[in-house]
Length: 255
Image (cartoon, rainbow, N blue to C red):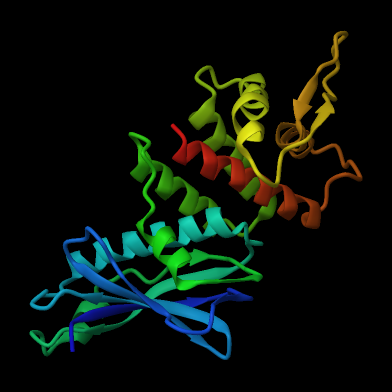
């Protein structure tokens, strides 16, 4: 048996692989040969990275594999448009035939990775392969994957939304201006979005000349001003967070 590292995932509801194969071969990776999706009773439980023969596993390698697992989770988040609430991802098993002390490696790995997802769609295994291998062409891709992963870990939905919006500003607004976000959504995102297009609403800003702003920015300002509007509630914020994640993922992958 090849060496492997498996990752335990909890907090995902409704994401399953179609009946049939639950693994895929990985192209163009120096270490990972195959990824297997682990599920029980149609419930997503995690995944396992089967490594190439002769690979020696140490804490440094597990750390690198965990970063790939986190990127995989971000791509699932971006592609599947999930409801995000409370999710944990952590390496939970190591097998290395060259090392009799795998438990000592586990003891050196930080275990506090928290995300949260509830997905309600069944996908063929090839979609998981695409999500695993997708990598943003952005010059600062690693930084943005890290930022998005940390946003996913944020349990307070209002804080998460504001965090996501700041990431979007840094991606599409050179002058860090909300009107640039509106222009990006109007001219770049919406024309290319097959579904989940973003609507527009008249700004609530107290100015003489009113203008339309995208609903993501409109809702961000409702949250930021904290005026007790009836438009603001956790359910709505979760829905808007999903829309915002769609735009973020598009911006990261269409530079």
